[in-house]
Length: 60
Length: 299
Image (cartoon, rainbow over all chains, first blue to last red; front, side, top):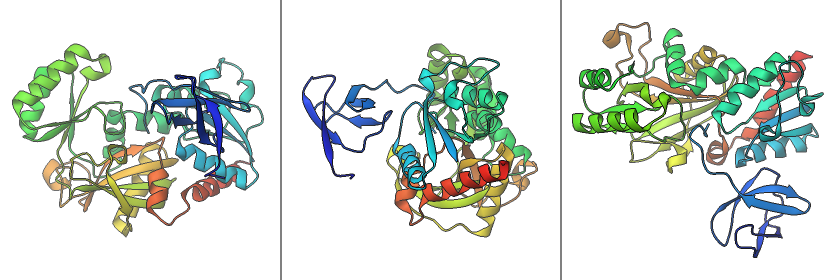
């Protein structure tokens, strides 16, 4: 499962990209085109958006 | 059981946890805190029927408030609001460790540049300046000289928001190019690893190499005490090996034990993917075991 991929539209370039098939809503993936972090907004259908910038109080 | 996962970003840690919960057929409510509204009297619909909420908020501020609301609604939440409040703030964290007699690096706090400079001159160089709130080794400064300290304090005083005007200064602990991260549930270690780097910062987020680590009895005792000091829960306890820091009773006159370790921090929203990779232990399985025990005990 982990190696399977699905296609989605890159929100920055508009191009089609391949992402892991087991993505979760809320997960962050790297765009294979721009390297930008993308947030998974929905999985059926897959919708991506540029992820929020790192904020100062983020962390563990 | 029904588990509510409070999140704003699903990291690999949360994904591991979700995978384990699903494998055991537990019901999951993924709760994106960015979409919630919290009233004073009634919980949001997403909290309905959950047996336990697991706070995995990436933003400290959200973690602090959502746990307070959960407790106000009478819904069990891990970690507790108290634990989050103590661990999220390095001053509270250090005070709690000190109060519990857990060895922790000598630390002083000041509110002005001149008072902070007096502290570093007393500590000597190098010493360490840390943000009161912050993670992943960000904005940490090793102060090697008075001129460096003056420059950093001035920048923080001028450019930072009010939290940066609280100068949290700590002795520089001569550790063997590594520190120890222990993941523990209510003081019971699940797994431990060393994080090694030639850089003085040995956070996994800074690219430190990780390897499994076997805890001795002394370290286990410190982990239990450190956990209790901050209110318990699923915690990342960070220790450094030391031949005797300024926190030991002989040098500081404080009520701490002399050990081969010093506990510099306890993390409440702990990441465990690096630990899961570094050890043979199934970390998410052990975390879910603990959650199941919590829910069972509450029923």
